[in-house]
Amino acid sequence: QKEVEQDPGPLSVPEGAIVSLNCTYSNSAFQYFMWYRQYSRKGPELLMYTYSSGNKEDGRFTAQVDKSSKYISLFIRDSQPSDSATYLCAMKSSSGSARQLTFGSGTQLTVLP
Amino acid sequence: DADVTQTPRNRITKTGKRIMLECSQTKGHDRMYWYRQDPGLGLRLIYYSFDVKDINKGEISDGYSVSRQAQAKFSLSLESAIPNQTALYFCATSESSGRVYNEQFFGPGTRLTVL
Image 1 (cartoon, rainbow over the protein chains, first blue to last red):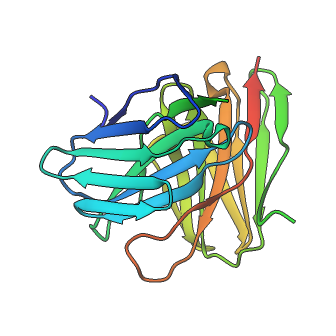
Image 2: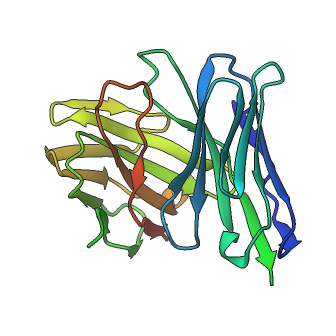
Image 3: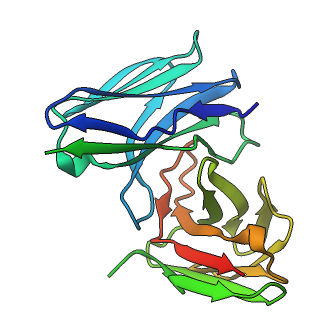
């Protein structure tokens, strides 16, 4: 079983829809949770970063972490065609020896005009 | 100019050939990473380096080697390429600020095909 599971999609929604992207994980030591966005033929770029449980909002994007359920989500409100990309969740423990990020496999999102 | 550059951007090679992928950065970061990306598997860490003299194996280092020639340069080598090393390869960099998490900045990727 992978440490981080992410629905690969593809997910296709109309412009203006609310999008929910999700990841589950098995390692209870994960404390830092990231969402990266990757456009076609580009490298990933950090979109949101949260520590431990709770919500974080940045414009149209909201990241949620539920550590009790080992579940994280990224919500996109009023989705735009420019949001079409692959979204990768990533996680990291707080252990000083754990220097690596563990990534989900990515969800491919298309927002149709 | 891009902060993290990778060369070549695309490469087709044959089984058994030695291949080197190069990464350069102008961000002044100490930490550099090599990942590969495969459909359905996401990004997996091959090697990482926290400074010129500190190189560490990642999750999938077998069949790969690296060289950190300078703070700004980190190369990935495939000594004898095999078809299952066909993938998209990314270099990334991050600061060494003392925080537990430092954002990683990725290059544009190298698409490698091994025939």
